[in-house]
Amino acid sequence: MSTTFNLDTATSRANPTPQPMRRLTVPAIRARKQDGVTAEPIVMLTAYTARQAQLLDSHCDLLLVGDSLGQVIYGLPSSVPVTMDMMANHGAAVVRGSYHAVVVVDLPFGTYEGSAEQAFATAAHLLKETGAAAVKLEGGEAMAPTVAFLVQRGIPVMGHVGLTPQAINVLGGYGPRGRSEAEAAKIVGDARALDQAGAFAIVLEGVVEPLGAEVTRAVSCPVIGIGASAQCDGQVLVTDDMVGMFERVPRFVKRFDNVAAIIANAAETYAAEVRSRAFPGPEQTYQPK
Ligand code: KIV
Image 1 (spheres, protein in one colour):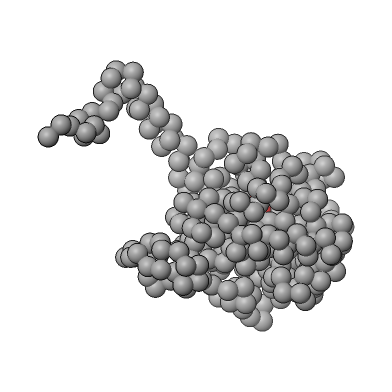
Image 2 (cartoon, helix red, strand yellow):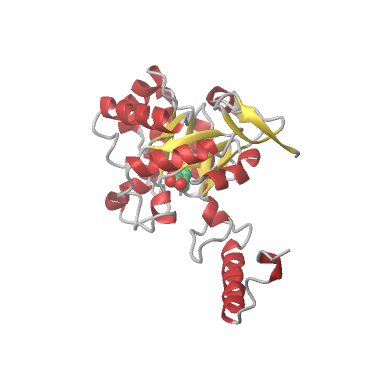
């Protein structure tokens, strides 16, 4: 793909914009599933920085500014302590670094569950601060009235059911959900409630395989799986897991590369060159004419 410097009329920013490149829309993502069929699976990855967004953008339909940034970027023990400022700053960076994918920002724990009005204020603030097109929130049936409230007021919502990491203190661990019949039925009911409330897509995380396919069949909107099933309408992964930044990742993560090794090797070589006074060499220093 050729790269040219252009003025992006949507943002008034001069940037290298891959051509042709037009940002996808929420209705276009929703319309990818028609009568229960998604001919072209939906591709979503997390992004937290402008550079990461630039690298991922042309390959993805959706970029998720996930609250997983709490663990991945800030070294927090869970997503529970993630703040609005974190989501606003990283969300804005990802929008600045992308031109093609729909950017979705997670609503952080404690900023939306209290009432539909609280959720609207939080979501509107994040959309204004970041320029993202949609928000994601966790929870099923209990959150359905909030989802309807937001959608009716112009805020596209992506749902998130199954394993919901913000509820870690209730769940007690990150193991797969839906192993009992009752829990599986609850997850199907949660997804149906969000679908009927107007969610444009639903993330289904960490469920046993047959349930992934069942939830996908049960709802009209696209279901985006993570540790769910290849039968979902799309897939999402945490990019840092997918590129091999971490030693330990959930079982469902496939490592497509080993970026941690590349960084560690570069640092080792740099350190050796500094210690042996081989860096900077003549190519990296300004020589007198
Ligand atoms: O926060 C996040 O990155 C997510 C994905 C794992 C879906 O919610």
